[in-house]
Length: 341
Image 1: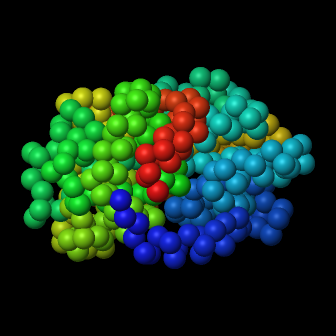
Image 2: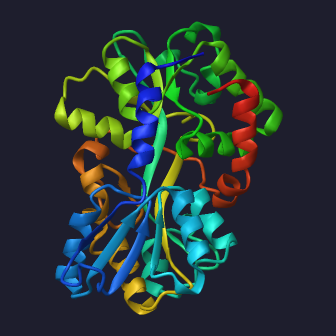
């Protein structure tokens, strides 16, 4: 296994950007109607601005990663200004519920807009955007018939992929939730064999998905695992990129997926406005929330934007937020034991 030089340079820079704030709407400057703590940073300002225009409810938001913001919420306790906690990982939503920072939000609107498997059974959080984490490849080097259509992630342990793989690093929530879902699917022993197989194939570890796509386009590796929307973004900029998407495990358990979602905090000063924001994001604002990032809408009544839709329909693994959250530590330990950096 090798780690690309760029990843070791980028990590300290990213750490320095954590927990920066931004605001929108007439209440900007600390007196907005709603305070949102969010690990999501895609297209938020545009969506919140439109929400304010539609409803008159102003929004202020603070960026950080899932773990940082959850710790901040816990530390602030009853004095937290946050009305909404928004994450980019189902496991993080489950963790937030387990930590008791979210309050149940009874909403027939959300119940109708968000499929049952994309929301908490106790109404503490709701998925708002869907993404597939699947295989991408260089069509000049790979024929998609070479992939294992039943067990595509496990199939990358085949020795024929030695020296041809690039993947995201072990600190990424995307990697950890993928491995947690594989543990849930296959059990710990077989998942360890899969991760060890990737390492044995000298996988090139990279710090972000775009780096993978550029490496594949440049011939640095042949196959990667990324979120579908990163490829959509790059194709929007360069339709001749030379990287294609393969929906994993369509003859088996389906492609791994995850969600961005949110819940109302149990210390919210404005729970009704917070609920209104979630309802808007899942209905009238669904396209404003997902389209700019080429994610997939959770609301089945809303169509995906054209680039994401061009990847075609696919079968997905069920999202088990409890598995993503409760097995996270197991996944991290397994990655470390396998030597996956």
